[in-house]
Length: 208
Image (cartoon, rainbow, N blue to C red):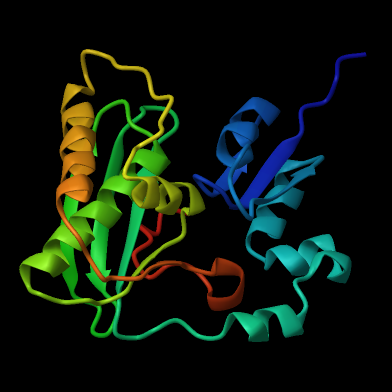
């Protein structure tokens, strides 16, 4: 008897949505901090679940306790929020940054070919740092990528991305970003956007 295909719902991952195979689902959640996903036997079940809150679907046992959420505090309103979007099928990546206090778009770059989400997040943080330094501002910066934040602190994009004829521009941008980090000092705190406590990053591209 043929094995019945499952449907995989991803509430929080590199891309969110319903996927028809584990390989597609794994590409969204493997190594992604705070990934939220579950398999279902039918498309109808998956579609119904995706419309609901992750914790409501999986049960109270996996909820983050209110105490932990409270300990996180609230995001700083006077800050810059950045995010990247990466299409796992095409490899296209883009990133953007917003003024969290008023919702104004500060920059938006891409799409770039053959990229990754973490590369986009890294470039977005450095772009925000350069923008704020130009205006002599020590405004905090939020990103929901722990990996990209660590790269910025180490002043090195530790990516395993393969170079292709299509992504030469991305490698040039990473090299320039690394050089900027080595040549410049900044006082801006680079902070983790706590999605579980605060909801979606305001700079999210909204491609659910």
